[in-house]
Image (cartoon, rainbow, N blue to C red):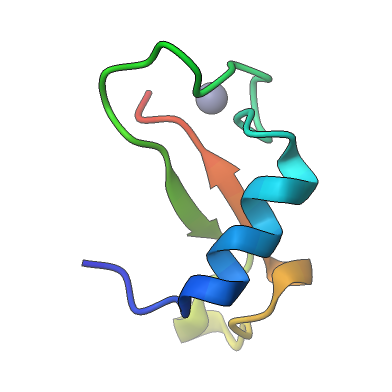
Length: 59
Ligand SMILES: [Zn+2]
């Protein structure tokens, strides 16, 4: 499971308009829940903050 705090997730989902930030797919009507991606992975020094997070669909 993800260790992203709920308030950050909410912030990202809100900013993304509940759509995948990569392909624009809306989460509404999707069976699988979208997840929050680190744009720059934490192993590469990416921080867990809204600027470095993106809402992403499963595909
Ligand atoms: Zn997508």
